[in-house]
Image (cartoon, rainbow, N blue to C red; front, side, top):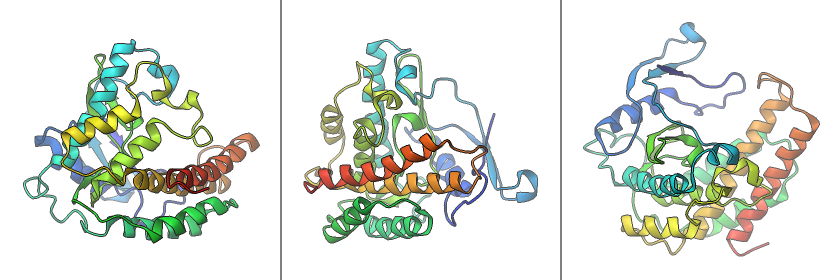
Length: 292
């Protein structure tokens, strides 16, 4: 079994919601989306110090860096790339009413709410001077695309948040704590940002899909387009939005290290890298929008 609980210290209100995560995974158990079986949720914080849930352990590998990816033959890496996008399309194809998730979130206005929410988190936690992030927020807020559909949105979809089999198939999609009902293209944009990231945001050795054999990111987007009825014309906006979110997330991690609640002190080199990542996310997002 696996016990899942929030991290310790400086957890922002609404973040790391274990009840939401366990609920959506339990609801998806009878769908084509691969998820671990949830055994139970406990809201009693006296047990572990926080709400938690328990799920079955899923055999396989979490591929979260290039060295781990290179343990697999190239054909397996290729299959992992295709399975990654196919599993995402399966998530977005779930009938939320049949899954009992029609009240899982407010389906419309997803990007607007996300921008406002992440901006508040960033203003609350950031201790890095990153005018690129501020400029990106303004540009994103000024040209939000029309939302085409409302589906389950995973919120943090990438290879490192899955378990793959030895054949490269996705055995389980993990880390649903940011999931809600919303714009499915936000997941596609995030997958693209993680899959082929700007190197200032993620050096190649930290990016599993920098290993040879994975399909090109444009091929993954084309495959998603074959599996989904959505128009991908504005996908670059969603890539830029994803870089903004990632910059806000890294700012929060940086603040938690400075606050001494990550279990160890970060080195000066690590703290400097966080700052570089935040600024790099801003620049990459602006570049995705065609602005510098």
